[in-house]
Image 1 (tube, one colour):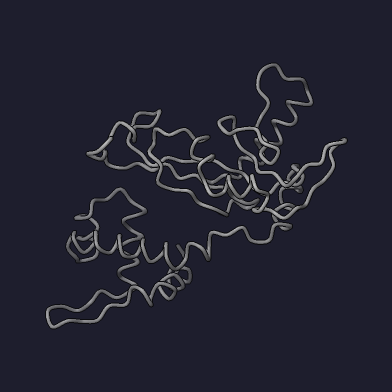
Image 2 (tube, rainbow, N blue to C red; image 1 turned 180 degrees about the horizontal axis):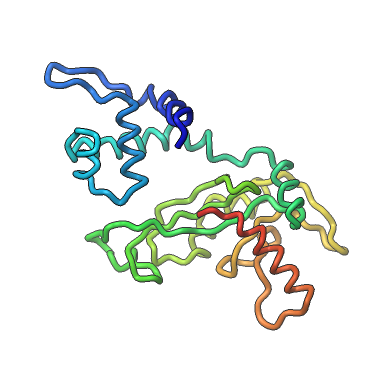
Length: 231
């Protein structure tokens, strides 16, 4: 992370993270809290190891992770993870070969320690404990929505069908009513997904089975643009 980005993040979080000194100890600066949390999130180091890096105890690291993560969620998530200018996104995907596309969606598994309750639900298909993060991205790979917290065993299609994004797409409220005509079929703005996702009027997925050249070309363009997913 560049220094300018780090300082901007600290400034944005300062209202929530600024602490007062006490008679017992000097409060951690916002910059140190954010640095501690970024280090912990970016490495597999233990709380104790991170604490040693910054001269604080492991309980301070744990508290900082929770407090900074909550502040980011409450103050920055809706500001930074947003759809943005739909026409710019559509034009971006069109330039890469897929018309009237507003995003590509996929999921990723975040490793976790196995919970004591219903632990088997968190074992994913590659046999480790995880929670699922599912998100669409725009033509530059930026998140435009986030759905997080499902157990690792849950299938992508189920997560998607139970998301607020699915409801908005189904109701036609996520994208404006822009359509193009392909042959004699009106095509709304679509998102792209892999074979795990359901085929919908507004969600395109690859063809399967025996493919002719036109279907292979479609799959190539879809996978090329769906590859914008960065998670």
